[in-house]
Length: 133
Image (tube, rainbow, N blue to C red; front, side, top):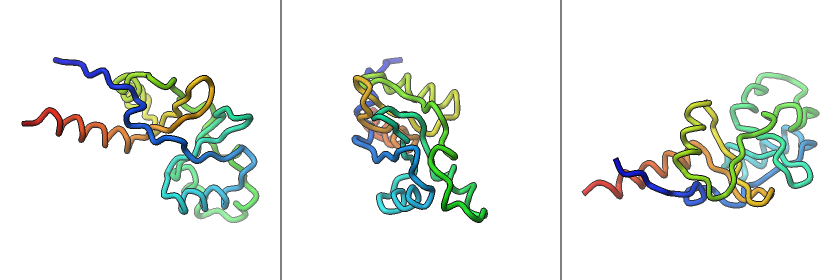
């Protein structure tokens, strides 16, 4: 079987929206809704310290008093982060193995993009279509 050497960057959403750890849940929801995204990296001092998914916020849907809850309170700490240029295969394998919904892509310590399970499915479709007659 032929192995494709595709960097994760080929399917990464560049320059993702980010929030800092003090952002409130309503602000994060507004950002996700306005830009149509489901994952937002949480950064402090330009370093990814967490990630929040729409699923994380849905847990709070039936709770009252969530206006004061911050990103730091709901984020998944230490997000799966890969260096730009990492192979798509390696990233997807780790995401699948550990049931991770996204990977923060960085270059020289700076966030350059986010790779999600939806990006992985888009890559699969393109690869399959490219291999079919």
